[in-house]
Length: 447
Ligand SMILES: Cc1ncc(COP(=O)(O)O)c(C=O)c1O
Image (tube, rainbow, N blue to C red; front, side):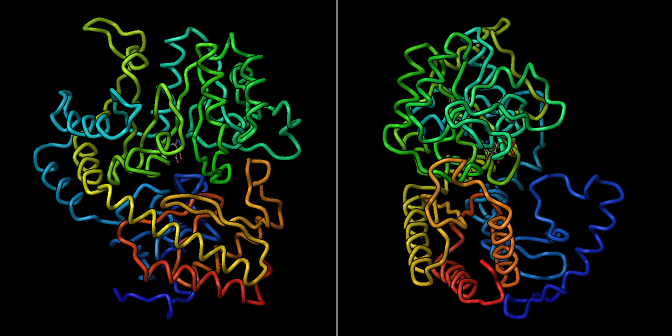
């Protein structure tokens, strides 16, 4: 199959993808298996990936800033991961017995992440969040969860509430409404979720105190991506932890996406000291994974000492050896030096994007840190979900920008974090900057 470079790529050269989508829609509702798949007007079906680039089935090449929603920190088909998985495949893909490989990955995480003394592995970030919430309930005998408005934590019912509020239903700033995530979500679920607003320390203190006798945990992503890839103000995370400790409420850091913030993870970087940490994405090297880690005390609910624990946790594919060896290979290659290099690339990219915004006096801002960034069609960088919420015309501007990037051979995620990988360098950063500048200068776009 011939490979088209971005310069020769045309939107019309997507015939095979278009045909596949027609087939898919007959047998898969909406044609895709994830609500988050870009299908404007149909998805580009992936053929293969190498390093920073993804090739679709029509032979178009894209610089992949999605990296499977920030999972692929080394890009596609990273050789040490391929090799580790290949060796494991020959020995068997899953056993009812434990393996050495789960101990290796658990040791690596315990060594690196300060709040993690012990770990249990599951298969997805959703499961990690679910078991962390259940662990907090088991430890406190309380049912309710406090979480941040607009933050995405996967598909466990309580973790989904308040994820998609709009100005029509999100309620007063001092009492954000527990907006259900789907029609029919039980009242018993929404009643047990207390929403807080990011960077509103006083509001959070008040809401936690008012509900303290029923709260098991506060679930917080220190840099929530879908809520705006927001950066926490100094003092906000400390206020959350201090209030939680006062009432014996557990703090759960959701680092499924943000573990890539540093060698020691996101909580360590932003000064959060959680009881439990949810992990996923990068720790599986591109294979399905989730993990719940935490202090020995918080993790003791999983420990039955040979009998039934307070919280039983199983799963047919939990700690499957392929994910374990792939994750170990990927994380081992993520040395301190690699984290530093990615951080420098990210700093450079964000600073230059900001320079372009100023040069063109464009109504944009950029948020993020380390290897993550997000462009907002807003003059002021958002500090909370309500600031980051896209009006219809803003969503339209972002869609146009995404299409423009795609036509120039770059996948830019919509309303989510874009991510760098170790497979990227100055060439890729320049390509992103050039494309953004073209978009800002392009009179046909109404950005
Ligand atoms: C912060 C956060 N938590 C949880 C999840 C759910 O992880 P998974 O998709 O592996 O179930 C995600 C996924 O994007 C996430 O970003």
